[in-house]
Image (cartoon, rainbow, N blue to C red):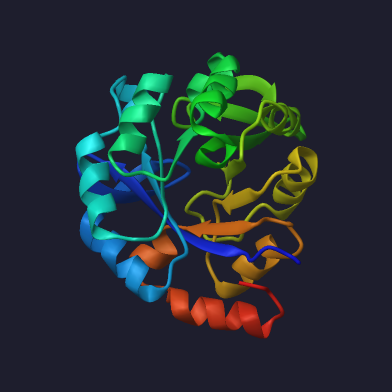
Length: 250
């Protein structure tokens, strides 16, 4: 029995507000976090992703207070990432009401963090986020909010994350982020096949067909969107209907 695919709106978050940019820069305000979260649940989102996008750059922790507020207002799962560097910080976010935490820069710096998180909270609550960008024909992992090339090969890193027990990979194509030109299908497929764990495709959703491609050709288990949902360009209910009509078990 094939597991059902999911649609996940992503709330990128800075200074208490939802924001959206292109390739991680030129941010514009997209409203209040709690209001957006409530609306998405009502519209049929399966999960919510919450990313404190400037936490790592500003060297501070994800805002547990905001997580608490959002989690108190919704009943669907909420995954939270941004600046989580330790088991203690992850615990604070999970205690605030998050269902899962995602780690990126800190896991690249110390891959043992993945093992530690899995040991403490279980695979199903640990997401490894991979921000990838093409460099000389290969996909490299970028850290610090997409600013720094780690030199790691994204496909190899996905394999390692899976081996260390991560339950999911949140894969963002920096090249496609906010561009609305479609997900990076070759990248998504490569990561989906490499890690053998569920992959959330992110970066590039512009139309319904993009979601369909990511979930079929890209072999992703979930598709994440931000600006197309924030600015009401795509309605979640209509998107799910379209995907069902095209044979996706959603």
